[in-house]
Length: 188
Image (tube, rainbow, N blue to C red; front, top):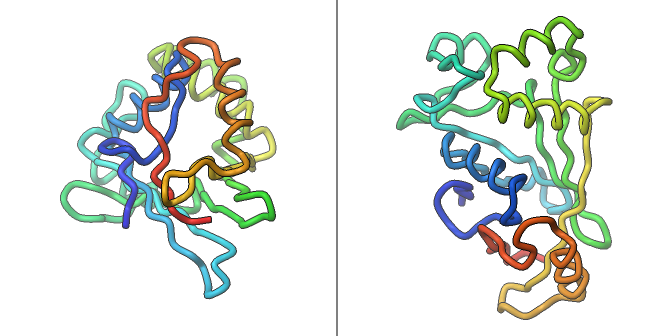
């Protein structure tokens, strides 16, 4: 079923400023992801994102129902809307080592003019602008990738990637051994 990034032990983020920012955004939007295999091979996943429209903002401005409709958001019931895939398309592709998590952004979201960036920097709260700036930097070409490795299997046993993950946590700034959430994935 759907993975509620705002309401359960389903996702991981480090307990530092970056992780706090990520989780605060997910919590405020009640961000929920639905993972759907695209065919019987189960080698590719389409990720559908929905968020709670009454909490949705673009900087200091609330996103109205009519604005969401104009942007292509579809009603998902109970105040939630589906994020349009033509604005941001998230997928996962199976690899021998795990999953390649791919995010493709619409071209106009990536190629903001200097004027629009300056305007957004003035309009948005500094924390939101900084998150947007980092996102745009990561998505210079409109597409970003990151690996997803399963560190604990469905029975709670460490996988071959656990030790590498534990070593990574030792080098994270902030509280390096703490996580806000742990993965509840049971797939291989």
